[in-house]
Image 1 (spheres, chains in turn orange, cyan):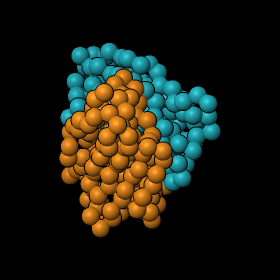
Image 2 (image 1 turned 120 degrees about the vertical axis):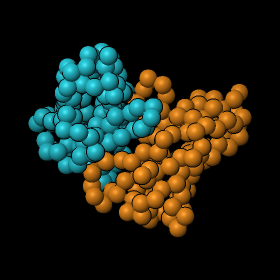
Image 3 (image 1 turned 90 degrees about the vertical axis):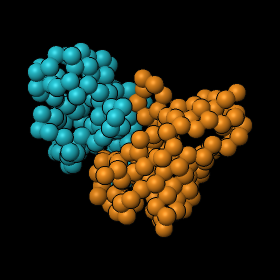
Image 4 (image 1 turned 45 degrees about the vertical axis):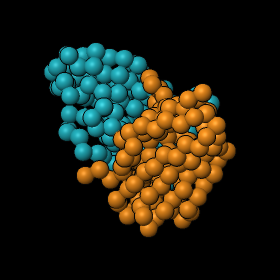
Length: 114
Length: 113
């Protein structure tokens, strides 16, 4: 049972445009969500997070939106740059359980074309 | 501040052998978690240690074990290796996962032949 799903394995956008990566979850106990970026041969790098008490969080070019009723979150990258080309993972946890256990989606490969 | 350091970066082992992987967390971080990444299963949680105690465990067989030392460094051990254990093993640290995100190392690529 996959509790966190990223239904789009890949996404291709033009440099300067918006990239929107989507993530759905099934477990209503999740209350903390994160996005990580991963380059080949490197570990995931933390990008941005959001707790369930918010519906939006911004950090520079990155914005995460959370729709709790739909159990859906999305990551917006504006404007997209070629250096953003990587695999993006959505992750969730029950932060109230105070543990380092994250449930990851399968990832979406983003390609930003110059 | 140095990041999470994992050693070795690459390992080749034979079926039936055992292996130990090492992780040095970011200075001051008390929580260390281990994840396995494979093409088919994605990133899966193995276990977490906090202040030398295993706080949570994923759905992996008992062949997978770990420990954490008083300086927060952690080791992961896999005994009786199987071909399916070939994967990228990632270590992540955090001061406190309830308050801050996990920071990952670059992983150890284990190949079992």
